[in-house]
Length: 117
Image (cartoon, rainbow, N blue to C red; front, side, top):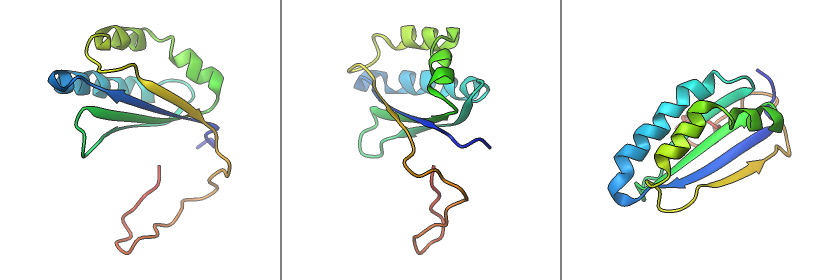
């Protein structure tokens, strides 16, 4: 697997009355995104304390492939579908690795079940 050089963290806040609809739209993005050229990994998380808060964490081979992905028709459609469903504009941050993961990292907790992104 290529070493990811770009990590995207996207925080999305649904209006309380639209949580299920927003979750369905976001979930539908996962499989086509996994098939995109340059997508290494994508995860969708839901905040345990705040059911209106969703977070995408994705890893991409480069900024260029990520920017190309944003032009996909299904991304534009999802943006249009979400336009009136969100409490605020999505917060998207781009990160790069300071230390590239070279091997699978060992879990540090007592259960041994913790895995890193």
